[in-house]
Every structure is written in structure tokens, then in C-alpha cells.
Length: 223
Image 1 (cartoon, helix red, strand yellow):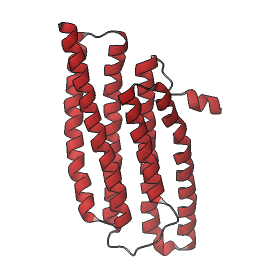
Image 2 (tube, helix red, strand yellow):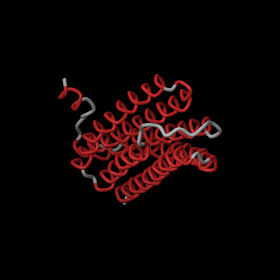
Image 3 (cartoon, one colour):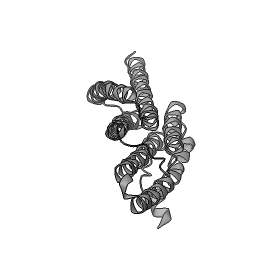
């Protein structure tokens, strides 16, 4: 009976993490849409959603640490709980990045509209896809699917570098649009950081399933 109760608690922990992931993903989607539409109402929604994310993070951490203290799990169950704690932190930081994008939007709502040379919709969709795939790898316990998320990170890094170069060129050519371009630089950077957190989540899924720390394997293979 104690073992069955513990497994039910682990299932509840996983459900809470998935609910947290849904909040974080919604935050990103809403923040991107707010930026594209210059919508202050959506910015306010992102702010409210961040409060829900922060509350969920605290509750999930408390439950995870309580399980560690009371149940003293071994092997794969221990790795799962440790992974949940780290994933929880990355999801909260995804919410922070979405909030940062919302702040950037508020700063330019009253400024002249400029058609920036960056496809933020594509970047946002790509970052969202990475989050969805990382969460799916968690749901399915699929380390190979998690591997694909880490491989995807290179593409959004490339998008961010291109955005950086194009926006700096715009500032040089049309300095009157510096504010809008600087905001674009920060939004692009936020999306790149969100993708990094999705990659971290995938890394933690791999640790849970395989018991392997692969955090630096991609960077080492590129040296």
C-alpha cells in the first residue's frame, strides 16, 4: 500500500508539472501575440498569468521536496523528482521571459509602427514548438524525442543572430527607429532564451529516463 500511495503522489506531481507547462506555454503565445498586435490587454493577461505561474511553482516545489524528505526515493523515482524540480524552475523562467516581452510591448505601444526585418511570429512558433515537444517527451517518457528538442536549439540561435544583425543594421541606417529596433532585439533575445529553457527541460527528461547528464554534449561535439 505505501508503494501504491507513493506512485499516486508521483502521478499527481507530474500532473501539476504539466499544468505548469500549459501556463508557461500560454504565456509565451500570448506575449508574442501582444507584441505583434501591440495589444495592452494581452500584456495585462500575461502579467496575471505570471502570478499563476509563480504560485504553481511554489506549490510544486513544496510537494517535490516533501516527497524527497518523506519517501527517500531511489533510482529512477529520485531522478524523476529531481528533474521535476529543475523543469519547474525552467518553466517559471519561461514565464519571466514572456513577462519581459510584455514589458517591451508596453514601451512601444505609443511609438510609431515600424515593420522590423524580423519574423517574430516564426520565432515565437518555433520556440513554442520546442516547449510543446519537450513537454511531450516528458508525458511519453521519450528520451529520443527529448534529443530532438536539443537539436532544434541551433535553429533558433541562428534566427536570433540574424535578427541581431538585421536590427543593428536598421539602427545604423535609420536611427530614428532605434527604440523600436532595440525592443525587437530584446524580444528576439527573450525568444532565444525561452528556447534554451525548453532545451533544458528536454535535458532533464533525458536525465530522468537514461540517468545521463547530457548538458554539455552538444557543445563539446561542436568544438
